[in-house]
Image (cartoon, rainbow, N blue to C red; front, side):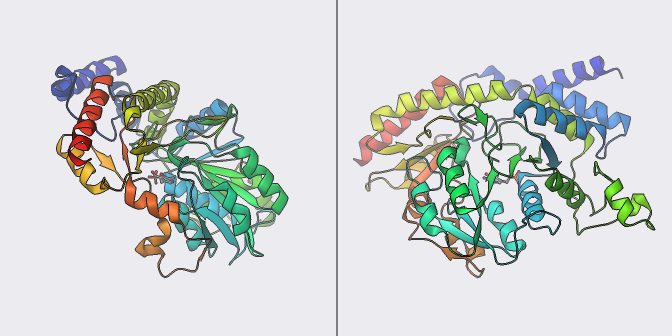
Length: 421
Ligand SMILES: Cc1ncc(COP(=O)(O)O)c(C=O)c1O
């Protein structure tokens, strides 16, 4: 079947399958996520399957080049999730071939309000996390606490741009320079966000992105680690694929060192298999072209949410965009500031009326059971992260949220608050 015919078939099947939701344009519901892909991506995906070239190859490297070009990153290394992108980054920063690499028991400062798989690679690689509280307005790490949290063993700072809100990079960079700290970024929630017109992911020695279904663009599951550092990039390519050199740009270096080995099966490091596939890379390349549109939509949805909910600003704190930041709104987080309003109860009420909600990232990660028995340090009481864990929730803020649906949420909230206050 020709690609055009394949598209016709997939397109009509897509329309048939989704006709119910399309017909009734205004649905009394807001989902947390909505697919960013459609018949175009599915057709190209299926077409690539037909070629049977499915395992990592030229389509993956094409996508990596496109991603680097779009954001002026030097090296982009794809992997099968944002979590794997973090794992690769930390593994490479700990690797003996990396100049000035992190060593066992070195401390890395992380925000208490971040995702679990920002933390876990640190633990898996023998590093000690130091938890620092978040700022209740921006939800990013509280910059005022970072410097005091630095101890004699602190070597790294692993920031997260929470929900697409770029951290205050001027202050963070000068703090890292002053204290000789290695900076790396978790940008998994913030593709398409900028600080002073510079894309997130450009500031640290390396940074991660996610291509999971609910993110700004997707290839179902996927991740990307970016870096300016050639050695780190080569190390990540080795670790991503079995520990072999096959995907390195500079294989000669290794072949000169280990002359008696078959170049195809020369394993120089402990690795995993974290690769994405060719059909996924095709899908990701198509999605990349639509990223600006999706971010624009997310920004306008968040603007309308803030407008419609502004009359409740004594009750809710909205996430404050950092100064000089271009926020890409992974979701729309709200923090309840009135003791009479119970977060779980209002969420239950909204859920009952078709509005999906979720907690904001992991809440205070330090409190999670998985963290109880690990070696760690904590700075201060993490009061804000605790507060977010108990009192914040987020709403869907994607390209398919319509203004009538936001009006509907505002009416529901109004009704709920009238009853409770
Ligand atoms: C801040 C952050 N880091 C890492 C991840 C992990 O990404 P993935 O789900 O692609 O593994 C997520 C997931 O949403 C995240 O929010």
